[in-house]
Structures are given as C-alpha cells and as structure tokens.
Image 1 (cartoon, rainbow, N blue to C red):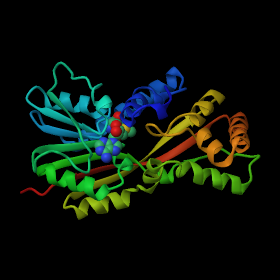
Image 2 (image 1 turned 120 degrees about the vertical axis):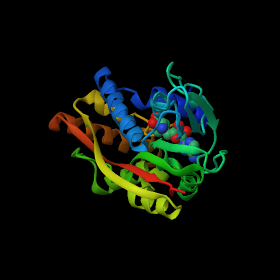
Image 3 (image 1 turned 135 degrees about the horizontal axis):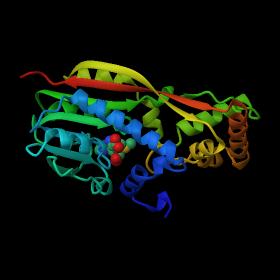
Length: 289
Ligand SMILES: C[S@@+](CC[C@H](N)C(=O)[O-])C[C@H]1O[C@@H](n2cnc3c(N)ncnc32)[C@H](O)[C@@H]1O
C-alpha cells in the first residue's frame, strides 16, 4: 500500500521500522543503527535516570529510548511511552529485566498526565515535528517533578548541507529545488524552522533551567551510486515524499531527471558525497521545589 493510503500513525510505524533505512546496504543500515544507539545512550545519560524512576519518552515511536530507559529504571520503575501513533507504540518491546511500560497515545502539546508526576523526560527527533513548541515544552515543565530532568536530541535540518557539486542545472533551478524540498510538507516546514536557540529560549521561558546545549555534527557519507539513489528516494520523515517525488510534482519530470543525473555524475566524479547536519543535545531541569 502507498504511504498515502495509510493512516498517519501506520505511516509513522512503517517509516520507523523500515522506511528510514530504505535502499541502504546492510553495512550502511548497521552504521545507521549504531549511530542511533549512540544517540540513545547519550540522551539517556543526560536524563540521569535512577532505578525506580518514572520516565516519559516523548514521541517514543517504536521505542528506541523507551527500551533503554526500561533497563535503567529496572523492575521497580516505569516508562510512559507517548506518541501520536498507536501503531508505533504497539511495537515497543519490554526487556525481561526492565520496568513497566505504559503506552500513551497523546499529543506532546496536551499530555494527559498529572502535574509533577515524572522524574525524567527524554526525546529524540520529536520536537522538530511540533508546531506548537511552547505548548510541548510547557507540558514538559508541568509534568516534571521538582528537580526533574529533561534530555533531548534534535537535528537542526535548516543548516543541513551537502558537498555534491551538481552540474547541468541552473542556479535558479537549484534554488527552486531547495525551496521545494524544504517546504514540501507542513512537517518539512516545521522541521526547517526548528533551531537550538529558539528551543533553549522557550525552555527557559516555561521555567526550565537549561543546563547545556551541546552541538555536534552528524555526517552521512555516500560512496556509491546505490547510496545516492537510496538518498534521492528516501522519505525524510514519516509519510513524507521523496526528493524526486517533490521535484517532479513542483518542477516537473525533466528537472527531476536532470537532478538525479547531476547527483550520479557528482558521485562518479567525487567518489564520496557527504551531508553534514548540526544536531543538538539539550539537558534541562525543573526547579528544585
Ligand atoms: C522520528 S520519530 C522518532 C521516534 C523515536 N523517538 C526514536 O528515537 O526512534 C518522531 C516521532 O514523534 C512522534 N510525534 C510527532 N509529533 C508528535 C506530537 N505532537 N506528539 C507526540 N508524538 C509526536 C511521531 O509520531 C514519531 O513517532
């Protein structure tokens, strides 16, 4: 079934399971999974999760952070996995030695959780999708217990850049392609409006103490035509269009064809093409009393 024939929740679950890795070689997929594991561990470390704690995984998806948090809280603890997608949440596994998992279908901007009931909140690649970021961060501040911790990882897609030298397209065409792909969907527009300064300012505004905003760079390197092809046909976010679909729809099949050809010539000439994405790790805490 095409992604347009699915509910948004099913598309999210399918993208998290396989869509984001579509077309990758086994080695590239393993590298992507290893990288996710590293991000998971760093976000969980930032939350300083103690045995017996109650943790919320905001925008949990299929439970990358939930699984790690369940091990950290142990049998006496609990993780509430919150997501818009019931289908994604239904795929979360509970480790045998882990705490209790509660799956909560909810919008991060309106959590059906009591005030001050949670020790830590973690998130990975979720805030970038949320239009009303002040409301979501307000909910984080509301449900955290005194001295509770918030730890998140988010990519700053507005400053994502590649080093492919694309020939055969005019400067105007390249600008139009850039505009079409960054504004392809409301989700893509929200994502490219996201940045670390506004996020930290909003966190302070809702009463959190921002302890650290640490920037890093994630690099995706393509070394052959198959990797470039996979990139041009991958869906950047759940249910979203591929770059080729967006360009075909907005600028026509001829431009899309020449864009693909330009990427193929670039990989042939350069041997490697690298995308660099600035990413933020933010840690914050609620007031001690
Ligand atoms: C890129 S996925 C990340 C999933 C998971 N955190 C992980 O690390 O694999 C983004 C998730 O955020 C969820 N999401 C987006 N907007 C949301 C909102 N307003 N409230 C709750 N979840 C949301 C999506 O349904 C999706 O599962």
